[in-house]
Image 1 (tube, rainbow, N blue to C red):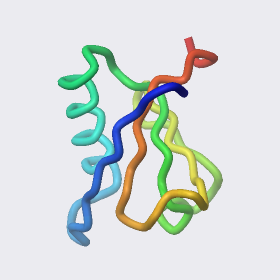
Image 2 (image 1 turned 180 degrees about the vertical axis):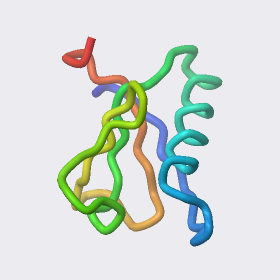
Image 3 (image 1 turned 90 degrees about the vertical axis):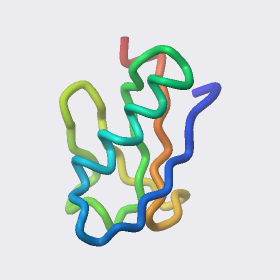
Image 4 (image 1 turned 60 degrees about the horizontal axis):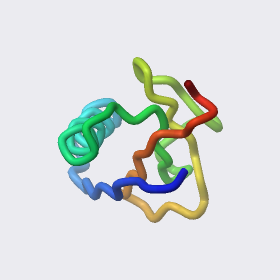
Length: 77
Protein backbone atom coordinates (compact mmCIF):
# COMPACT_ATOMS: atom_id res chain seq x y z
CA UNK A 1 0.00 0.00 0.00
CA UNK A 2 1.50 3.28 -1.10
CA UNK A 3 -1.42 5.57 -0.39
CA UNK A 4 -4.79 5.35 1.20
CA UNK A 5 -7.62 7.33 2.64
CA UNK A 6 -8.40 7.51 6.34
CA UNK A 7 -12.15 7.79 6.90
CA UNK A 8 -13.85 8.62 10.21
CA UNK A 9 -17.41 7.60 11.08
CA UNK A 10 -18.57 7.44 14.68
CA UNK A 11 -22.32 7.11 14.05
CA UNK A 12 -23.37 4.23 16.35
CA UNK A 13 -26.57 3.67 14.34
CA UNK A 14 -24.90 3.25 10.93
CA UNK A 15 -24.02 -0.37 10.09
CA UNK A 16 -20.46 -1.38 9.22
CA UNK A 17 -21.40 -2.11 5.61
CA UNK A 18 -22.65 1.45 5.09
CA UNK A 19 -19.58 2.98 6.75
CA UNK A 20 -17.27 0.99 4.48
CA UNK A 21 -19.41 1.88 1.45
CA UNK A 22 -19.07 5.61 2.21
CA UNK A 23 -15.30 5.29 2.69
CA UNK A 24 -15.00 3.36 -0.60
CA UNK A 25 -17.07 5.99 -2.41
CA UNK A 26 -14.84 8.82 -1.16
CA UNK A 27 -11.69 6.89 -2.10
CA UNK A 28 -13.06 6.37 -5.62
CA UNK A 29 -13.84 10.10 -5.94
CA UNK A 30 -10.37 11.10 -4.77
CA UNK A 31 -8.17 8.49 -6.48
CA UNK A 32 -10.28 7.43 -9.48
CA UNK A 33 -10.30 3.72 -8.69
CA UNK A 34 -12.14 1.38 -6.38
CA UNK A 35 -10.14 0.25 -3.34
CA UNK A 36 -9.93 -3.44 -2.54
CA UNK A 37 -8.97 -3.35 1.14
CA UNK A 38 -10.23 -1.57 4.23
CA UNK A 39 -8.49 -1.78 7.60
CA UNK A 40 -10.64 -1.31 10.70
CA UNK A 41 -10.24 -1.54 14.46
CA UNK A 42 -10.66 -5.16 15.64
CA UNK A 43 -13.68 -4.17 17.77
CA UNK A 44 -15.72 -3.82 14.56
CA UNK A 45 -15.23 -7.41 13.39
CA UNK A 46 -16.06 -10.71 15.05
CA UNK A 47 -13.20 -12.42 13.17
CA UNK A 48 -10.01 -11.37 11.39
CA UNK A 49 -11.65 -10.27 8.15
CA UNK A 50 -14.80 -10.22 6.04
CA UNK A 51 -15.53 -9.40 2.42
CA UNK A 52 -18.01 -6.72 1.39
CA UNK A 53 -18.42 -7.03 -2.38
CA UNK A 54 -14.92 -6.47 -3.82
CA UNK A 55 -13.42 -5.03 -0.61
CA UNK A 56 -11.64 -7.10 2.03
CA UNK A 57 -12.33 -5.64 5.48
CA UNK A 58 -9.42 -6.55 7.74
CA UNK A 59 -8.98 -6.04 11.49
CA UNK A 60 -5.84 -4.14 12.48
CA UNK A 61 -4.86 -3.06 15.97
CA UNK A 62 -3.11 -0.06 14.40
CA UNK A 63 -6.44 1.50 13.42
CA UNK A 64 -8.20 3.68 15.98
CA UNK A 65 -11.87 3.05 16.79
CA UNK A 66 -14.29 4.61 14.27
CA UNK A 67 -11.54 4.96 11.63
CA UNK A 68 -11.36 3.17 8.28
CA UNK A 69 -8.19 3.01 6.18
CA UNK A 70 -9.15 2.22 2.58
CA UNK A 71 -6.57 1.50 -0.10
CA UNK A 72 -5.70 -0.56 -3.14
CA UNK A 73 -3.45 -3.52 -2.40
CA UNK A 74 -1.59 -4.56 -5.56
CA UNK A 75 -1.49 -8.24 -4.58
CA UNK A 76 -5.31 -8.27 -4.69
CA UNK A 77 -5.47 -7.77 -8.49
